[in-house]
Amino acid sequence: MIDIYGQLQANRKVEACFWQPGEASGTMMRVAGEVEFVNDLNLKKKAIEDRPNLKEQGMTFDDPRLIIFRIAKGEAYFWTMKTNFEPKKFIKFGE
Image (cartoon, rainbow, N blue to C red; front, side, top):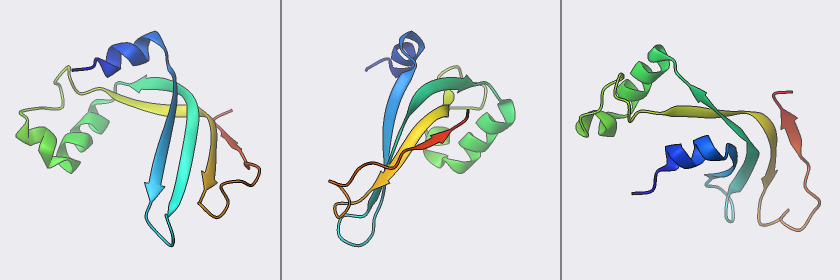
């Protein structure tokens, strides 16, 4: 298994893509920035409550395998197949 947590600790720069189904191929949002690790017990409890598959794997809110992170600062842009070749309109956040 790949140690994603260790990789993120060594290099916190990430880029993620989120897809929303829709007309044609849907809409993508690409987000780039640096990872911040979040150690919030209430958030971890909510993650366990909202994701039954984690409970099924025997995970609890205080399990050291439960790592939560966020991209709190960076930039994002939206695109579709229709707008793919247009100049990107970047949205900066967290500054």
